[in-house]
Image (cartoon, rainbow, N blue to C red; front, side, top):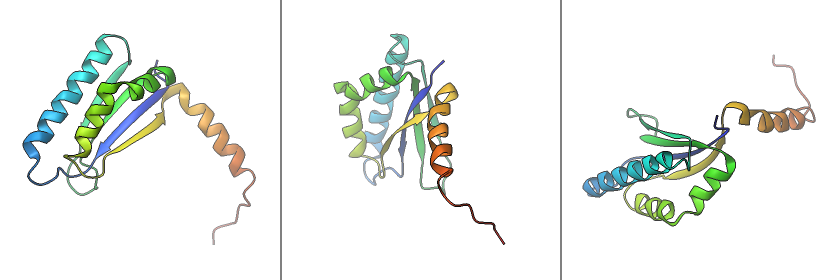
Length: 122
């Protein structure tokens, strides 16, 4: 089971670039499906969001730390990311933790929080 995720989020499509944005979207979905079929990632999800939150959609790639690091170094991933930057606003590529992978960053947070004075809320 995957313990890491690569989260790609985007905002509004750049005006006048709607057609190209669909091409880039389809290219990304096809590429991620190939990665999954080849066992280079465990799976991926595509999420489209309603208006109002500033994020119009996201793609989540699930796998191990090594798998996702290899994806980020892959030239096709880098080209798709550059293409996406040219057609959508606020593209973000974020590393994340899922499933059993959540334990380590949570332990680090709990340790750090133990050093911060806790004040009672009135």
